[in-house]
Image (tube, rainbow, N blue to C red; front, top):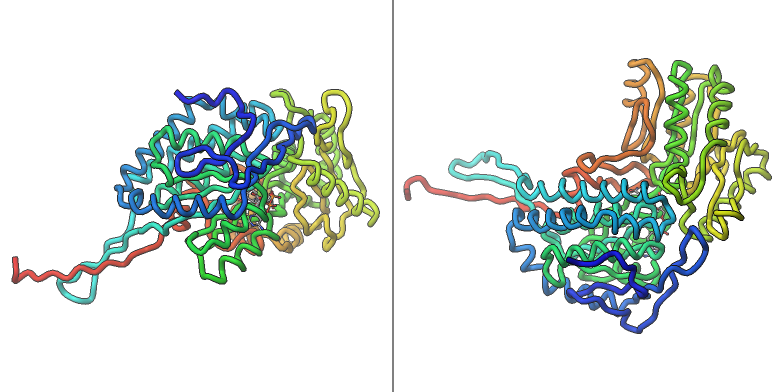
Length: 491
Ligand code: NAD
């Protein structure tokens, strides 16, 4: 039985079935966002480590790709079962590296496990297509084939879920996969690598590299033998990846940012709308691509809703305990960026209704805790309206009616998720039809995707692919059209 209970003092890479230091021996300190203190050292990978991992992956992929997909699903199920056996240990690592509560970390771990079971089950389906042909005695079918080596690069916000969302479908489709973990969350990625090996993933088929984006991520994107790059992170980096991988016509799946609207109509159940606004804006410290960061409220209920929301927000508890609503943001740089953005909005005339500052002292110590922040009187073309802050900060907008609400919701560089609160079926369905987003929710939050449902967005939220659901299989496989000619006279 593997032991995930004790955190490694140095989190190493996992390549070719071995734990190994970075090629040049360098490490970097991983800081605990709840305290600001160093938690552990982490291998600081470079192009040499990427070359080594790609070499091992190229050697191992043909064998893995030649096993039946049912067998690969069995191995992935074994990973999910091991994750279930070790769920509290994994959740402890997630809680340590992110500062989120153990309760939230367990919820995230369980979601990652569910993803494993869902994808493993696809090993018994993996549907292609059989169809007809214009030519007699010719059968036509479409099957999936692996791409080769998949480069997976993830963000730190929900680290074990982010690993699961990419690693399970990439492996099921018969690829070898190299995960570049987020520099802020090496521990859960390491734990997944340990369990993948224990579950029987052959050496070389799955590797974990740690390090910084430009040093370890970029060489993975640039490597000519990486057939697909699947990336979850910021638009800026996503754009660079699309350009770089695009030069050699490699496939890229980009899951990027959001500035997601939540509309509160004049016929909304305001208590329910407040509950979902709190969850959308502040859960996980607002570090969700699907966070609700533009709350668009009908004039008729604006004042009442604002009061209810501010009152409820001021009751939120920030800290690392299970009784707290959310924890720190992931690093000091992100915290400083989001607070500076609030200050710029304030200077431009916005009103900060609550929050807008760091929380320090007492149990918060030197951690990167940000008070839940609500801003109003923000211009519709201002930075606060158009830029993702990835923190516990949301803006309120007053609109006349449904038309103005939908127009404002759609007036965004992003198009990831959106929600409306209304009792009217007619409004709800008009919203579902007209909102320009990858996910539309009625009377709920802007977040909350499930493993069997496709997730992704329009415009700068991505490049058209969907993760999760059976749609994820389209990211990690290519199609092969097969014709079989036969001759009944030769029976
Ligand atoms: P980021 O783009 O800075 O980093 C994400 C990952 O990319 C990290 O592993 C980082 O090391 C790596 N990276 C950075 N530069 C790189 C480069 N030049 N080449 C290759 N890799 C590089 O993003 P972040 O700020 O850490 O994460 C937050 C972002 O992620 C937000 O925009 C959020 O909306 C987005 N996100 C999107 C989804 C989704 O499914 N759409 C889910 C979670 C987070």
